[in-house]
Image (spheres, helix red, strand yellow):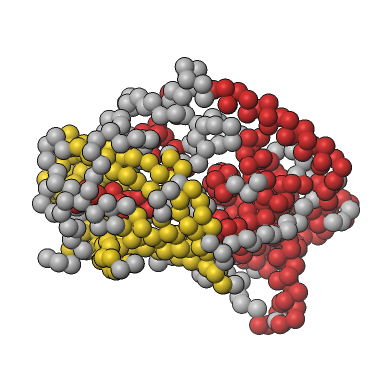
Length: 183
Length: 344
């Protein structure tokens, strides 16, 4: 099927290099373009870390509200998307820590809602086991297994030593395994 | 189960599990929050805060930008060939109403020649691969109300109960006069359309902020150094929602007949921007179309300056029945699911 030809002026390709100066100036158009390009992946990442749609949406919203100012400190090294993802992980960790503190103050384990299956169509038993992990354990597993971060990268994100990240990851995985193997 | 197997199962679970998708509403909320002056301090990697290095990199980046933008500026020189659409970009452009926009009216400027009936219409976006997918349906209601002492058309746009948009149109020129959009809980945007600018006011939980004026820019915001944004940026539901009532009103209020031609002054104002353009409309034939709302004898109008994008308007009541590429055109169409007039 051939399409009719059009003679509209064609915009130049919008690379990150050309968008970043506009983003730093807070240009709403540039912000909207970057949102459309990256929000799906960032929202999925935030959701995997927080297991909450409202929290994930808030994290992505906060990221884009603060992006122009944050970019003034951005070193244009590596992939822009990887940088965005690291900021999302940090925002999610901050939120998870806040939530955990709040729960410690206001809730005891008995009053926590029962774990809901993550994906009813998938591996329900594994989903329930993941739900029973604490936030840090689940974060470690998501970052390592799903996002493919190295122990060094995880350590940098959590502010701990790489060896400690490795130890905590294996501890989390062992706990998950024991929960999965529960009858 | 060993650790590798467990890791594989976890990976599969997360990668195939449901994840939320971003919405136009969220993007509008982000822009509204910034427009209201809100700023966030993000938790950055400490290594990114080496200020001396940052400063030197910014200087380098600025120099690189100038070098990068020089070719763009020079490409605006007529005859450079850069203004021609490339074959790779055509498919998106064909599907976009924005692609049909023009800087200047080609035909007589349209003024309403008949009153519009009040009512409610439901539309959905469908494409040839999924003709039955009407999950993205939205509602448009037309009524009248007084605004600044004059009776105006009022279009209400609603989708899924989350995003609502109300647009006031002048009854003769059919130009937007004002808009109120609820983009999120606690956030409301009010826009006043003026001759050459749009005044934006954002009401947040903290109260109404100051008003900011954005100049109307023909055919959309320009990139630094020249060029335009890609057409598909304007094809998002929230943005198109602003033009669709205007187009529906214009086509509903004109005396359509074979050979009829008119140019519509279109204005769109996504957050923080304001766009002004012309759509040239021409009745190119009669057609009978079937959409979920029924079978209609219609006027078929070419929309914009290139063939391939059409509006089908019912002959009896002049409802906008269908908008987009023709059957077999390989693109998306907005189709009428249901229509009802209050006055009948």
